[in-house]
Length: 526
Ligand SMILES: Nc1ncnc2c1ncn2[C@@H]1O[C@H](COP(=O)(O)OP(=O)(O)O)[C@@H](O)[C@H]1O
Ligand SMILES: [Mg+2]
Image (cartoon, helix red, strand yellow):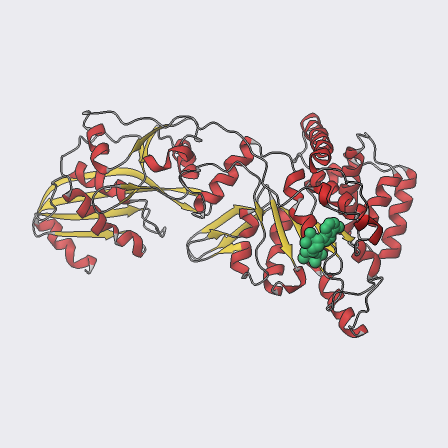
């Protein structure tokens, strides 16, 4: 129906009532306030929706009218106009249903106009008035609090996620009828109970004690876990790169509450949080296939959704067979890896998502995979190998803190009866190094509590170099042509190695080990 043709109808009819109730939508991870304004009059029946509504919101008319009919409120005799303000923000999804239905009931005089003051309404309606769970509840409850609202009514199916929000009175309803009874004081809706937080270890596919040999790769994994550094494994097929990477979650410290809140918001907005789970309790481990699109990896879409790099926030993003990923997708990863956030610009809105995973990559050393293998011959031409290496050493790899070789497992290690150290033992050291970093961050007021994100100027204080270390680094810069970015990364990794040894000052031996972790810089002089 053309909106302008209805204006006359409203003016000719007898206005019955006006209502304005609070709702919101999420853009990225931010709640944007929406005011649902309803004007009703007796007259030729219509139900129009204005205010830049997407298809799912326009269809709300059907769900809302049918839900109201289930309460014996028939809209046949009314002319109803619903305006979603602000008009210049595109609204998608079905979470505005509940606010529209209640706005209409207020406008029709079925609910007192003050009953909904200061209350956020969120929920998708079924045709029979059932309230269905919504995406992105947690950021919207936070947004409501910041907007000065003191209460919210949300679907009961969202109870666990609702229980994470603090400082707002959240009521749970199973259907529209329960909400109406609550607002007309015939019954009281239950409040969301505070959700208990019990972090769990991310299930892994085994234990480090099952890995044979590979001392250097194990050490790199431990350093990466201790300082939240990005890490690339380079080695022939079958050397255990995938195996090792999948064991990373087992040596990371458990998720903290604040981190869990962020992870929960991201998964909730993405629609990947089963309502019965309600809160993320494990560090995420995401391993997208190499065919993943740019939008799938970093986020995107008309209604911006988080990509793998954000879904892995506070956890691990594992890119197996890194060289096989689309070039565009990998290039799009560069900015989030540097800044820790993804920004998606759209014509009418800008969405952002946090993106600070530990990135793990695995690649073969050459197209056939057997370059510098002790027992097998590489069949790649020099030219092919060079091209392949140049692709790896591109700007993405420069942003990885550590690259190490994972050679084929030594025969003696395969047959040895000695069991290697367990994941639990390694995690004890990682935990200790993490708490040293946390204490230092608190003591010095640093911007971050993990070494991987220390700024250059913070490094000058926390990783001050002695004379030997300085000489070593200068030589490395000259010989390897380390970029300024790589230089900073070496300092951060050296700081982590010192933390694993519980040492206050960074020493030359630690700087040397950090330089060893720049395999690609060492092999491909610029
Ligand atoms: N160092 C190792 N110790 C124990 N098992 C290993 C080791 N390296 C490889 N394997 C086993 O060999 C198989 C191939 O390993 P995988 O991790 O897929 O190698 P890659 O990813 O380097 O090609 C796996 O079943 C793995 O369990
Ligand atoms: Mg593999």
